[in-house]
Image (cartoon, rainbow, N blue to C red; front, side, top):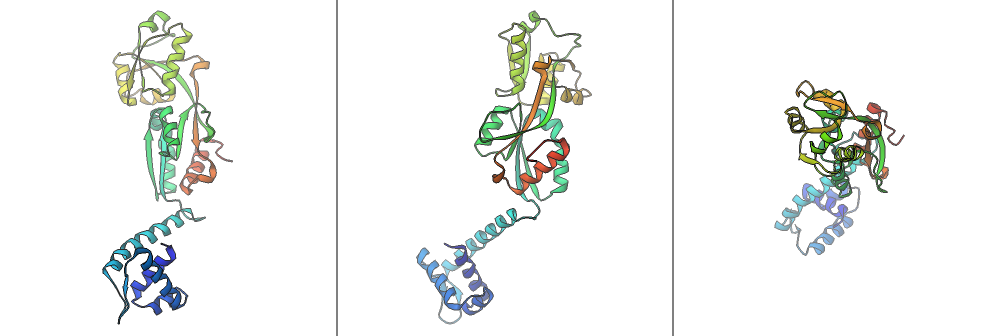
Length: 293
């Protein structure tokens, strides 16, 4: 069915007249008749009673409901991409738990204030899961730790993080290899880049096996670290922001392990919605990220 045919059918139903519908749509009556006939042939159903006053048949009554929905969705989609129109629709953002907890809230608040008609969906997960979700079409944009080598993703530096070793007791220096050998580490599930830093830290101290427990939330991890359950590796800024809630201590990691950049990853620019373009602009202003500038 052509959209034009549905628009003509809708006007005939509204006006109750082929002539009136033709005048409203700036066409001739024969064109209106031809489109109605075409619809009836495609659906193999009589849509309009033509004897006496024009009225919809039962089939016509059923089609008019779908016509309204189809034409409304079509018009809404056009308005979504119309130049100079206010961004609307939804924006699906994927981010790491630590980024979501501290870095994104002020940026999301600015974006929502500037573009209140956009519905924001925020999903958290480890870097590996976020990339898989992006490739599966589940996210419009993602924030990941470290640059990812993928031909379909464009990535831009958003935040620089200094990672620290976190413990429930004070540390004047890095724990000895013997202590690390028997220590328990708490981390987000497999695919988390900070978990990989744990393995790298242990390897630099000659430790090749230790216990790493999976945690789903930042609060749970910090709470268990404060209780003395084990160590964690997290961004320094995140730890400082939660120190008033959890009695934890930290020690900076060596630069080659502790320096991590969070990247903003997006698909090709010609696939962006207006909401994605607006968010990239807010992000650029907030972080000086060179997002398609």
